[in-house]
Length: 205
Image 1 (cartoon, rainbow, N blue to C red):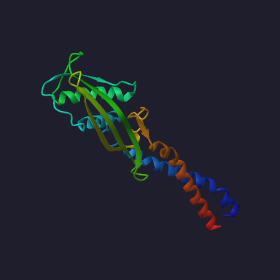
Image 2 (cartoon, rainbow, N blue to C red; image 1 turned 30 degrees about the vertical axis):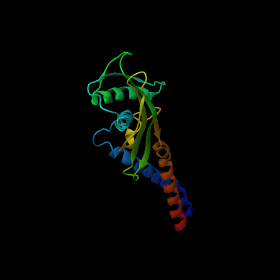
Image 3 (spheres, one colour; image 1 turned 90 degrees about the vertical axis):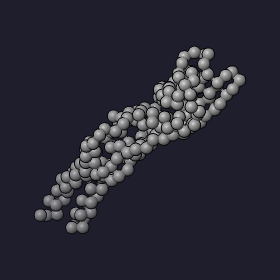
Image 4 (tube, one colour; image 1 turned 120 degrees about the vertical axis):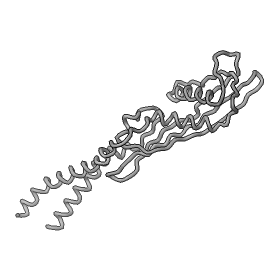
C-alpha cells in the first residue's frame, strides 16, 4: 500500500473508532435497564421532607385536636410539605381538624433540593442522587404561646443514568449535574479515538 492509499484510508478508520467509542459510552445506560425502577425525584424529595419533620422532635399529640397550615409561596415544595405535614401530625398522635378554634401548627419549607451527580466508569455509570430538606414549624397552643421546631433531613441513593430524565429532571428543586457530562462524553471519547488513530498512522509512517 502506498503512502497515498494509506492516508486516504485514515478517515474510514477514524469513523470506525469514533463510532465504537460512542457505542461503548452508551452501553452502561442500556445495561442499567435491568432491575426495579427507582423512585421519582419527587418521591426522593418527599422522603427528605419527612426526615426533616421527624428530626424536629415535636411533642406527641396524645389524640389532641389541632389544625395546621402551610406558608405557601407558590413553590412546588409547598405542596409536598402539605402532604408530608399532615401525615407527620397523624403519625404523632394528633387529630387534624379545620377551624380557627383549634391550636395550630404552621409549617414552612426553608430549603429543598435534589442534586444529581454522576459516578462510575463508562460501562457501569450511574447517577448519585442526594435530596436535602429543612423545615420549620411554629405551634401556637393558645393566643399567648408560641413554640418553634426546626429540622433537617436527607435521602440518598443511586439510580441508572437513563432514569434521571423520566423521573422528573425539570422540577424546580432538581439540580442535575450529570447532564453536562452526558452530553459531552460521546464527543470526548470520539476525540480520544481519533487522536489514537492519527498517532498510530504517524508512528507507522
